[in-house]
Image 1 (cartoon, rainbow, N blue to C red):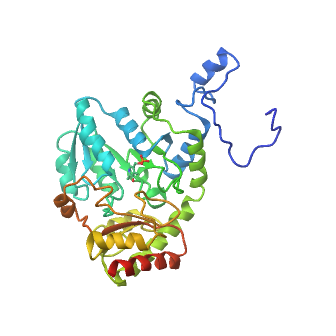
Image 2: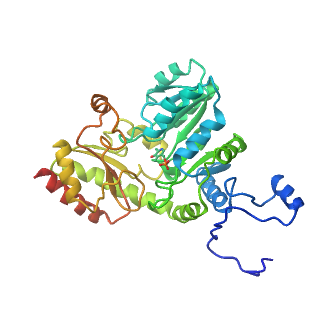
Image 3: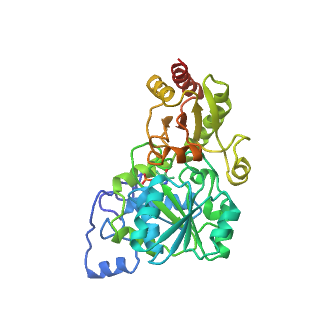
Length: 380
Ligand SMILES: *Cc1c(COP(=O)(O)O)cnc(C)c1O
């Protein structure tokens, strides 16, 4: 029995804000090293990371989830756990910018080369797999144009070639898609985004089902990539409302995707729930419970119109992240895709009028009013 609490147990899991644990004797130390419950040093593991990992594993249909101090930290840990000098990686051409840099700028220094492919072109992927690859990195839904990859097909192509499939599921979340159920080997999440959901933590998680957990937990510990107890505690609390937030955000986004094209000054609207989206059929087959909280639209009038929109719509804050309870907007041409040559940006369809919305859980009319104010200013 706990001497302080007696038979009572706090309803809310406590925050274990301790960097180290005490042990009664050497036998107890050996027992923890042998895998019995307990902790020694927080960089190796702590109760709040463990609890968060268990919550996320359950959502992703994983047998384990290892938490790290950011989305990038778990992507790094995944690569550190799996690749060695001389290995070849395949990766989607439209990955999150920092992931792309990690693969194409950092890993070559360690003798690991990455080939980029269009992962919505299965023939191209099959072709690239003719040369052996250790793993393939894709995103369920890409940024910002929300191209949806066919996880079932990609995972089965990779499996046949002995290549592991790593899916970054940040934009979809396990509410929409559980890649491990579709044959992927590993899932990574930026918990910073929708899983945390309140814009107050920077964390990540890597989840697996059949691969052993040890190399990933070890990479987190040895390379110093662990997340802090308080952030894990906050993320656990955020996760409690994930289903509600994604449901409401997705239904708001779907409504906006139908409403926006009729508004003055709005050009193309990009949303996987729209029948005119190139991957609508894949999204319909693969996603459960909606098409997500992300949406893009184009303003006629380019950058100047965007500036007028941003200044007139403070209730849709310009904030280059996503997944908050509030509706926020970002401008890919100057944030996530800033360092692409303008011609390449245009080729990818990221024009000077493109705005990306991360749709929150506010009443729909409130978001529409805020957007209307921005649109009237943009048109003036
Ligand atoms: C934000 C993001 C990441 C990186 O996550 P951090 O928590 O910022 O390190 C990785 N992938 C995607 C798709 C993201 O949106």
